[in-house]
Image 1: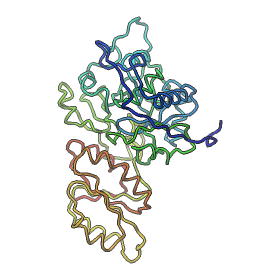
Image 2: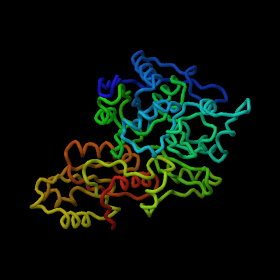
Image 3: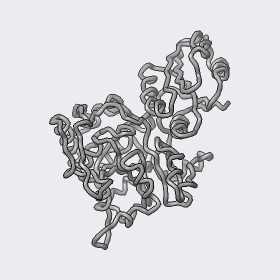
Image 4: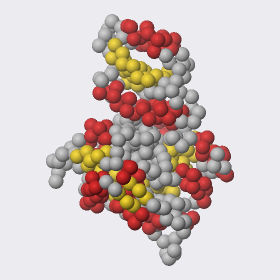
Length: 398
């Protein structure tokens, strides 16, 4: 079957029908033997998804607690390549490998030793984070040496990114497949990530056979990526697990740094160590203007100076408000220009859940330019500002 010769099917499922019973002394263990699925429709949908994964020709889309993922067998280079082809993703942008148990991770590991212990694979520095945040939106960086994994996943690097999702549909698919799944976000490269099955369908209609639909993603931003192989450890990509939470794990994590790059030319010549570090990301078709935390007066001044109300009468301006901008204080913009107003939320968790879906909606409404109110970089604000900066064409400082 050639690409675009098939219909892309959206298969609704219910995470409420999924149950894993806990095995003694196995905290991070979700496998098929401990899995029950009470809904026949959900079971059938997941079995179909697993069959596509086994065939290794096309990727599938599935929900996680962060965003929807586009997944394939992490050990099969042909399958992994199908992810890059579907997304139009640069080949040097690494993928995250998703597992459902530490046992599964151990089985990925080559060794001359008969019995492999977790500490032989995972450096001890990660254990406080794993105990606290797995399963969940945390990705760790491990040395790739001795892992039975497609080299395409790591994009020519000597490390690999691993996480264990908490979404029960994702865990069930990985457990039923019984193999690690490589999965970036399910969106065309550079575009906003998908937090609904309809977003995935918009980007991949006719390109992938199956989208597993479990409704909106609970968090709405990709996972936090941490590198404990360096000293001090580094947050390579901020996410919903915050710097403050990681610091509270103690040990070397008390001194964790956050990766930043001021010299974009230098970074562009390097191979990224984790997803989201090198290329423009999360961008809608409209031009995004980020206002670092600033007053409504500054916004009005910028718009007046940069958008001619007479020449650009057809320009549709999207305004995405967060914690402080008030609609009534921006009325001069609403009165003079065609506008689309969007309130992202008043808390970090609300904003993270709404940011990508709101950017996608702006594109659907044919907005030409989007003005986004920045937030403080405390707690979830670090991840929010990371994503908006990556999508922005213009950044306006206070």
